[in-house]
Length: 175
Image (cartoon, rainbow, N blue to C red):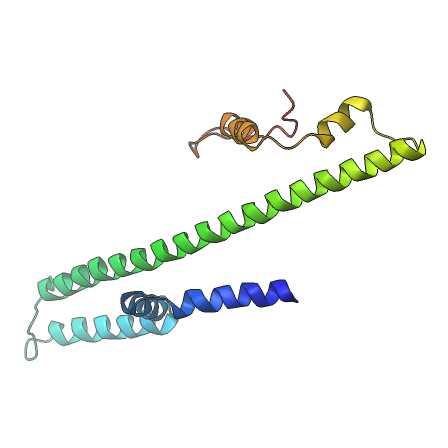
């Protein structure tokens, strides 16, 4: 329960500590990503086009240059706003990924320490371990994070267009 509280406090701080610009971009991104935004624009564009098809009320005749200008400017501004919101969300995701990595590394260190203690108890009591000596020796060692990261860099392609068989990650890093 303490972990849940810590995570929810962290999330609350992230939401609370947003700047005014971040709050505005979040609200605009939320509004423009809704179906009501699409419906409103469809109705507005339909009304604009139908009004300007009549000679009496036409203020932006075909090919609707003013409408094209307005839509283009809106697209530029909305794209920038959405990208700003996505960048902030990506920074949050990176922070969460780093936190997750730290927790996983601590858990790995704790598990290695527990395995060493259990192994020492088994040796002390003369109880058989049940793993091959080579595998046990590998598990009792501290994980070399640099070597593991190097193995991932070697086995994971950077381009997304590479064949699937090149995307296979080797699970044994004891090379």
